[in-house]
Structures are given as structure tokens and as C-alpha cells.
Amino acid sequence: MPFKEGDIVLIEYSVFIKETGELVETTSETVAKLHKKYREGEVYEPEAVVIGEGRFVEGFEEALKNAEVGKEYEVDVPPEKAYGPRDRSKVKTFSRRVFIRNNIVPEVGKEVTINNVTGRIIAVEGGRVVVDFNHPLAGKTLKFKFKVLKKIEDVIEKVKYFIKRRLKKINIDAINVTKDEEKKAIIIELPKEYRLADGIQIVKYLVSRDVVKWVPEVNEVVFTEKFSKEEFTGESGEQPEKAA
Image 1 (spheres, helix red, strand yellow):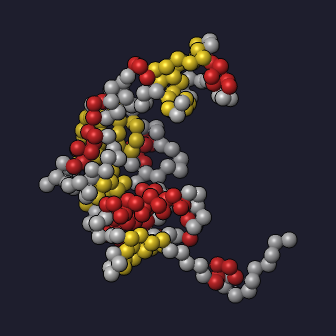
Image 2 (spheres, helix red, strand yellow):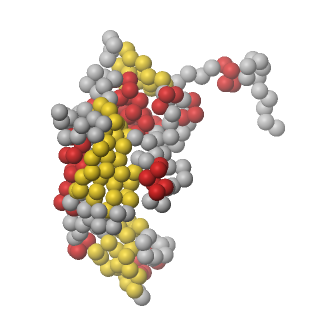
Image 3 (cartoon, rainbow, N blue to C red):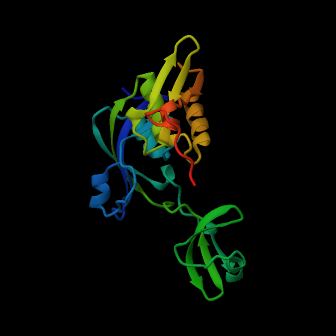
């Protein structure tokens, strides 16, 4: 039975360029290493996806909606349902001086932003620099290999996976989530090492937005923090010495 919009599923997937077999993205460390695309520090784990959210390209979204739990799939997605056809009008030529004025050394392959549009330098010819503003995967047919591991039903588990999407390195079991049934509220306590993490307030906002939008049982999201005496005084209760 197909999933409906708003269902939350846990998936593992790998994306390849069909014509070359080049790996683009994967949730599998084994696949990343096999294709020599492994990156140290990258998190390779199954991901939670909301059906109909539009996080992936159209062709993959359609395949996910009609998938069955536990079954492995391999789907080819043409450019029209991926990143679109390659548009030659998006390849622009600029004077080298434009880059020098902005302290940019023009090099083939470098990503640059001009007039708030991001592109890649594909050629440097004397005083001219050619920039391609097409998406790097425009014009490519993509091959998706994927499996839906499960449909996430529990409210608290849904919330934890929404947090995991924003804080990829967090241990999901270390997130404390409780429910206030009367207020239809979710109370979240993150591990203490995330209290002062860069961008944590933005993360809290995005998680709250996702939860309220995609978990109908929740009307309110509350983040809470606990500070114990031991954190500031040590187990003995004595005040730590001041730095010299």
C-alpha cells in the first residue's frame, strides 16, 4: 500500500550518475568506501524522510511514495524529474578582472557566487573566465538504490529523528523527549554538549517548525536545559579554583 503525504519513513539510499556509475551520495559507509567517496567525519546512517516534503528530486519522491517496507529498489530518474536539462544559456563568460576585484583567483572547478547566483568555473582562457550556473547534476539521469527500513509511528521517535536530521552526529538515544498530553506539547532536552553548539538556536527553530508541521499530535515544542551543582562545583561541592 503506498505511503501518503506526511508519513515519516526511515530509509537507506545511494545515488549514482547512471551514465558513469559515479556515486553522488549515500547513507552507507560501505558503499562510500567501495566507490572511493568516503569522507572522514561524515555520518553514514539511515535517514528519516517525510513523504511529500520535497526534500529529494521529484522522481525519487514518487518512488518512495510507492515503495514497500523492507523491499530493495533500483530506480532510474531522468533529468526532467531530477535536476532538469542542461541549459546552455546558464553558461556565462566574464572578464578575469571581475574576479580579481573580488580577491578571487579564478581556477577551473572552483565554486563562485556572482550576482547572488552560484556556479562553477569551467574554463579560464587568458582574460576570460567561463562559469556554468547549471546545477552540477543538470542533464544527468540518476540511479537511486534504496530501501524503506520502516515507517516511523511513535511521536517521540519522530521528534528524535527530526533532531537527528539537523544534528547528524548526535546520539539519538541521548536525546530526552517527553510529552505533555494536556497541552499537546513536546519537551526536549538535548545532551549538555549541545548547549553552546554553533547555530543551536537555528537548529531548535527548524526542529520546532518541522515537528509542528509534520506531527499532528503536537501543537507546541519546548526546549529545556538542566544545570546541576556538580557541573560548577565538582562532586566534592567545593568551588573550583580561579584561573591565575
